[in-house]
Length: 315
Image (cartoon, rainbow, N blue to C red; front, side, top):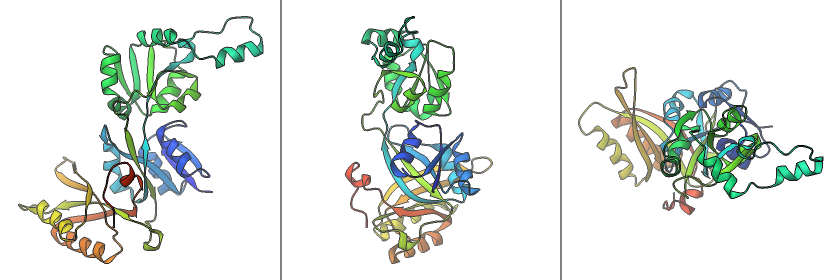
C-alpha cells in the first residue's frame, strides 16, 4: 500500500488532497512540512503532499526554502479550491444539553442545527481567532469587517487549530478551518469566509525518484531553481533562453538564500518537458548562462491550469 505524508491533521486541506488523489493510500499527518518531507527521505512514506502557493495569500515561503534542499523530486501537482469556515467548540455555542433527556432525545438535540441568533451571539463574543498563517491571510477582509477587534493568532495547522481548541476551556475563541474540522466537536458559525470565492491552493506531490520520460504522458511542467552570474544583464540572458525556444513561464519568483540572505535564487515553472529535444537544448543553454541550475521535477500539468486559470495549451 502506498504511504503518503502531509502536514497537519485529518480534516486539513492537505488531508483532503490525499483523500481525493490517493484514496487507497495510508495517509499520515506530520507536524511540519519538513517532517512530511523527511518521512519520504527516510522511507517511512512514498509520497509527500505539500502546499506551495495560494491564489490569495501567495507562496508558502517555508516550502520554497526547504524543497531544493530536500533531495526530493516533484512528480505531480493538484489545485484544490479552498473554503474556510469560522467555527467554535459546540459546547460554547449551544451550551450543554438539557438534563433528563432520553438517549433518543439527546441524539436529536445533537443533530438539531442551532438557530441563527445563537450563532450570531457566539460570533459577537469572539475575542480571538486562530488559524494557520495562510488561513488568516486568505480571510483578512472578512476578519477586518466582521471581527475588527479580535486578536489574530497563528497556529501550525487549520484543522489542528480546531482540534486543539476543542480541548481548550476558552469560550470566546474561534478558529478558521475547513468544514471537515467539525469532527473535533466544532460548530460552524460562518461558512465560506475566504475573501475570494475562487480561492485555490496548488499542491505538489514529492517522492525520492524523479519521473522518467515514459511516465509523463501529457503536457508537462518543469520546475527549477537557478542562480544568475554576478554580471549586469545576467537575468535577462537567462530569460532569453526561454524566449528563444518559445517556452512559456507560468511562474517566476525570486527569494534570497545564504547565511546573510545575500544570494538571489529564481524559482521557475516552465511549460516544458526536459526529456524532449527542446527541453534538453533549453536546459543546456540555461546552464551555460547561469551560475547554477537545479531541476526539481518534470511532471504532467494539471488539467486545471487550462480549465480554471486560462493557461494556454501546453506542449
